[in-house]
Image 1 (spheres, rainbow, N blue to C red):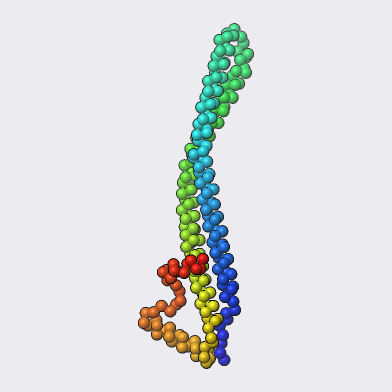
Image 2 (image 1 turned 180 degrees about the horizontal axis):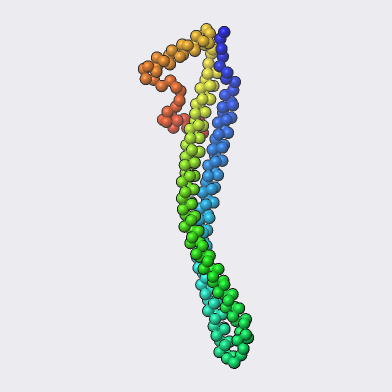
Length: 204
């Protein structure tokens, strides 16, 4: 009894290829978004914030000098007064010094964070680059292979049925494949790198 190949729909391969291509595009956008987010954070830490905090630190230095001068002038103008009368001047000086400490801590932290994020960014970008090669290269190859397979199946479905029984026809095809293999021919039907490049535009 003859047998038939269980092939039902070339459209299903085309639909799957379209889904793969859509996933590839989404994945590439997400990878790019991740790179941009990390780059923004690195720029904010290493380029945007340090100058702002240095300017703020200089302004606070001026506040400290002014608070210290106000305290000294108050003492000179009222040398016989109880020292407790200058409590507001001292509080102003303490507040300015506390602000200065915050600014110095932030400048130090930004320098430390900048070194860390540069290192981690390099590690992450290396991983994203490898993943990008898979998404861009390997998935493009898969899309091309699906296109080739769909074309082969479409051609098969449109071809007339073989004369005689299917078993005889299949045996004849296998014998031809063995003959070609002994002659060094490629009968796998798998496209080479050159053929993939030739049909990539049509497939994608």
